[in-house]
Image (cartoon, rainbow, N blue to C red):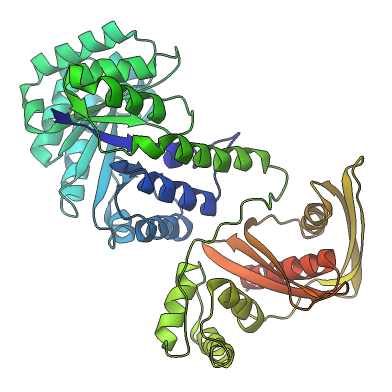
Length: 470
C-alpha cells in the first residue's frame, strides 16, 4: 500500500488573488486548520517582501506541529532568506519551479532550455544545502517537449531533488490522456523510481480530481490539492475517494477524513469572509492565535516572547514599559491573558505624537438603511472631514478615517469589552493594525462603543504613520 503525501495549496493560491486574498491572520488560521487535518505539506507563497512575508513564514512555522511547511524559491535565486525564515520548523521543504514548455521558457522566463537546465541545477543544489527535502515543480509539463522534460528530471535528481512534480497547468487533458502522459514519463525517466514523484492538475475542465486519481493509479507518491476551490483538485473529494477506494489502487493517506467536512467548512468561512471584506473591515472572525497565560513569576524575556507571537516587534524602551505595566497588573491577578497583554501594549508601548486627533464624529444606522459615518479630524490646525458608508457604523467610521488619511492598513484584530457595569458602562476597545510586517495596536475607552472604537483605530493609525514618516 502506497502512503501518499497530500500537499495543500490553499494558502499559496490565495496569497495574491485579485478577487480573493487572505489576510495575514487568515493565512495563519487556515494553516493551523490544515495542520489539524494532518495534511503532509502546507504550501506558502514565495518570499517577496523580506519583512512581511518572512514574518508570515515564521508565524506559520511556530503554529504548525504536524505538517511540513513548503515555500518556493524563484529559479536562480539564493534560498538563504527563505531557509532562514523556515529555520525553526520541525521539517520544511524548499520548492523550485521550472518551466516545462517552450512557451513558458521563452515568453515568461526569456530563456532557452540549456539556460533553464543550468538554473535548475544551481538552484536545487543551493536549496539542498539547507534541507534534504527539495522539490522540483515542472510547470506546464504536459505541453513540454519529452526530451526537455527528461533533462529537467535528471538534472534535478543529480542536483539533489527528492521530489519531482509534474504540473498540468493547461487542465485540458482527460484522465486517460493524463494517465498516458505519466506512463510515457515513467518509461522515459526510470530514475523517477529513486525519488518521490507527484502531480498538480488544473481544473479548467472540472477534471482535476479524476486526473489526480488516475495519477495515483499509476503510482504517484504525492498530490497537490486545495481545501478551497482555487482551480485545482479538491482536497475533500480526492481524500474521500482514497479513503473509500484506495485499497483498489493501493493508496492511502494520513489525512483525518473523519473531521474533514467540519475543518474544510471552517476554512471556507475564512476564505468567504476574506472575499466579502474587500471593501469592509469584517469584524466577525476574531480568533485568538496564542493561548499563553503569564504570571508575575514570568521574566521580561517571557513577556516579550509572547508579545512577539502576537505580532509585536518592540524596541528596548517599549519592552521595559510593557514589562513594568505587566508586573503591576500581574501582581494583582493570578494570571494575565494575551488579550490583556494586547491592552497593556496598546496603552504603554509605541506612544507617539498624534498626527490626527478626533474632533467630531456622527454615525447614522438602522435596519433599513446602510450605515453612514461623518468623521472630522484635526491635523496641524487644519480640519479634515470624511464621509463613508459601511457594513455597520464602526466599519463606516473606519473607512471615513481611511478616506481622510489616504492610507489603508490590514485590520489584524478588533476587541471590545465592558470595563464597568450598568447602563452607562464604559467600553474598552483594542484595534490591531498590520503594516510593513509589524503589528500596531490602539486603545480606546468611552461609554460609547463607537467612540471607543474610533479612538482606538485612530490611535493605531497614528502609530503606523509616525513610523512611516520617520
